[in-house]
Image (cartoon, rainbow, N blue to C red; front, top):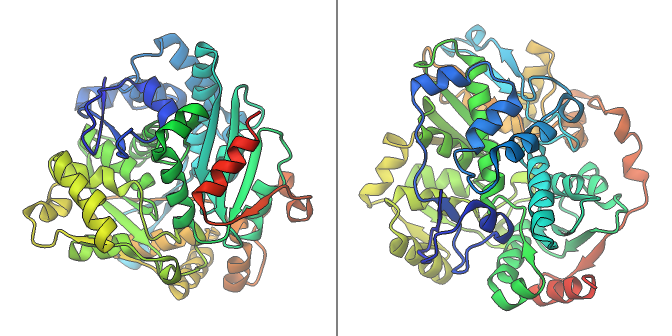
Length: 478
């Protein structure tokens, strides 16, 4: 298996090369040259496998430069009951939507049972073990630079803390995460973890990561890698739980399901796109946004219009307070028939010059729904509160704010006889203030996180300036 850049860089690289590299040298994102296709017979073979074995089967289609026995051992080390709390790893919770006449079953897929209570753990725990394995094999070190709007940062830091040969420099928007999210990250005292609170919004953090990654001399000198979903390894790990959810919601391998995914950076739902391209019977991929509806606007109109910091709303589902979706480039690459020159024109020229591009009159835009199955919708704070209240009252389940966005939009796109799986993104304790507003009571808090907000914090506030971040990295890599 070889990997290509969305912007046409000539090199065809193997998995372990792009694992440590992140962005391609031309600023593009890596994708496999082609998606491996699976058939009904393969689905039948995979049905019923333990999660770690399913992960091995899927990942081995994309990773041929790690010996099979080693890759299987990494998967078994990663996906355990001890780490994720259940043998199923990602169990489904059934919500009988037929009570409301929606015409199909609705499920929540629990992705938030890992160490930091968010779906990012599903991929980040694997990434930490892959990094440690490959760095030890090479006798090298890696400095990870990341950006987080809330959950990626804590998932990365918990996965990388104490790992040999790895340092983490995690940027986050100063004051824009929930108190619980901040405490999860900033309370870590491990010497290889560095938190940088950027005076700006998440998109500023993301721009800094890309700017540093595009400085090839600095990147090579300081061995800069990434853990954001621009790293293909993280995205391909997320493909596994689409298959796991499908097997739990169906009995036969010719049945179709739909997935609804709360999405700000397009990484989580892009993994669903990959699963569908592999042949998983997905009827619809439903993208749900909050008030920062850049992606919903595109799927409704064909116009992709990024917003500046001043126009990025601070919402009660803060992990989606994103107005520049870095993973969207991967999907548009496929949408345009993998035309790298056209892709580079859109993301490298038009977006930089105009802050937008328009595919509304391009024949390719119709393929987003007809061929790739994408539809979308958005949710507001009022919608969020109403969905949290309704789900708690009817099913006795408390959901977080992002999952509420997903469930609200899911109900707008139900199809008769087609199960809808809504990806749960986090446990509600991470957004306690909104849960209290909705239900008048605190959500359950795991005992290990009691009093976390009062712990000493280790964080540095910095300007939204890539040069300042590079100075900090250089000073802490001795």
